[in-house]
Length: 146
Image (tube, rainbow, N blue to C red; front, top):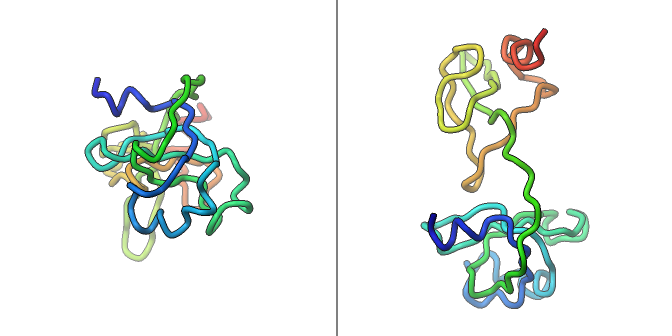
């Protein structure tokens, strides 16, 4: 396990934004002093994705997850991290219709056996939601046991 990946789950306080990407530095005055949890490691271990504790309405642009360099963070003791979701979201397209599937992590085959491309977002995968309007009925039935 690398140094960076062992930091997932640690509490983090933003002490500066000097070393982070310029798109994050722009909001430095609004981010410094806020706390959150390291939820992922990005850019070959050089950057932490921090999910802030604040309500999205109180954060710049309503964004709760911010990519920050390790040097801009004060890391604290680990907290209990929820286990990863059982299924990630994958998608397939038939004609003009896009369908969302339940996919096991690191696979390209849905629970219903359909081929499904992963749906990554900033280095992490979107959790499958059976309530999504375009959720595959077969996947929903299989994971709910119906």
